[in-house]
Length: 421
Image (cartoon, rainbow, N blue to C red):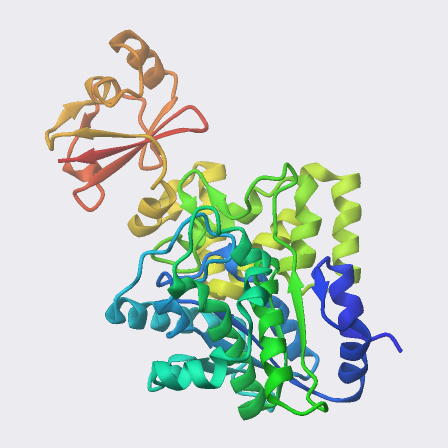
């Protein structure tokens, strides 16, 4: 009998590799299981490229299974070599602890930790931190041959450029993680991105060699998410799109999703949101029949911003977006203005009262005094959302927000932030 959850994952394009499709389908039809996904704390925040396996883990939770979320305090000290061009820089204990804390906070937005099948958060440093090197080598090192490990694509890809014994040992450590969770929590399934296939199958091999024939565990991976043109997903001109609001504000986060291309938006709705098949298919019809309304993009931006940052942050992001579209900046707070215009062109100026014509020429908003006078008299210039049409207007401290900046708009969409030094 087909399993509803696995069929949904297939429809969403979230099943890339499986170790035993029939076996897993049978288990999921007959019982509720524990399963896990892990991440190493290489930074103090996840970015959106990291979250597909965790969102998939959440789908299992919605079907009654118990998710185990592993933040690798131990493996983060080693570094995963999988398909990396070169060795990672080792992090200090203090930096790893800080990163673990940051990631934990973000995962609490995604998972339900309170219900009967509430998620569990674990750190592999808790079982590896006190283990001696000799104990590890005796208990796990003898389980896998060098030939087995060299045959794994994630290791083989590094042989030309070189791989240290530290990183070479990573897959065995992650394999031991799976075995530990299998023993302690009856964890039957590991999921991860497609780059984790070698590590996941190593875990299954460790379980096979340390348990009886009755032991049965599984692994599945999700495909690498790319844009329609094949380029890397989750990057903007400013860099990665982070889950941490201090790195990528809720407004920037919202804008990333709202700017999704028509060719990509339905795929992203399937992969990233928990919207039903019927809802997504209705939005797909809208993309085809009325693409100018951008209903699918709006739904995607709202669902993702609400999930990661909450309802209040979503409301703020929508308010900023509407204010910018209408030009009514007076509806925004100073903090919201600073956020909204973080990436617009800037000019620096000393704090001094200036005539409006001199001000916009010095700021590079108008190309000459003649042009500046035309722009002012034609009503094309606004300061902080207030239109200025008087050529005698003096730009003073009253126009400096937080005594730090002024937002100048020329025409409908040309903004500039003047920073005062």
